[in-house]
Image (cartoon, rainbow, N blue to C red; front, side, top):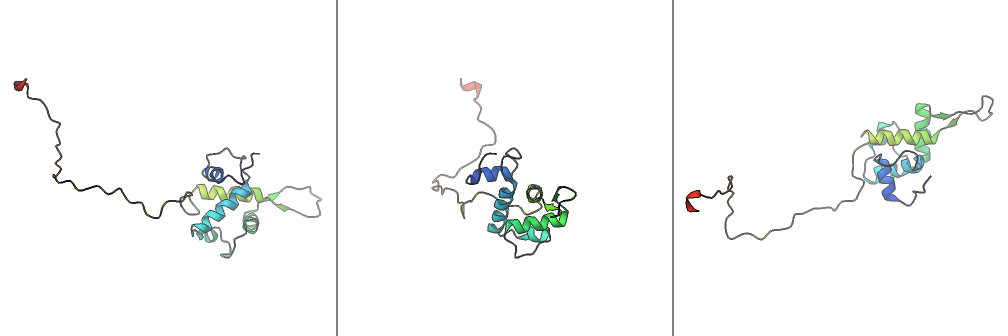
Length: 141
């Protein structure tokens, strides 16, 4: 796996599904997604997933998702620890819900607060729009 922890553009592309599945660590990707959702004030995802509104920790969020939807790793039948939560599957589920637009829609890149068009100097001559292109009169040739 390629190390993408410090590659924000890579995370953005992976969130959008533009990078092959498995290149980005699903848990790290889900963590970046939750960070972006919170940063953009898009905390409705907690309500959508029926999670406590005070949750910020990705591990706790993924544990709750795994418990709610039954995402467990298979262990041996006689394993004394019982079933283990599959956080990777929970992370993939969270990202998939985002890609479907179910967790809110927002821009991953920072845009300027205001985008203003370039001011144009007023023309002293009023502009007219001629709907037909000018044609030459053959009599004047």
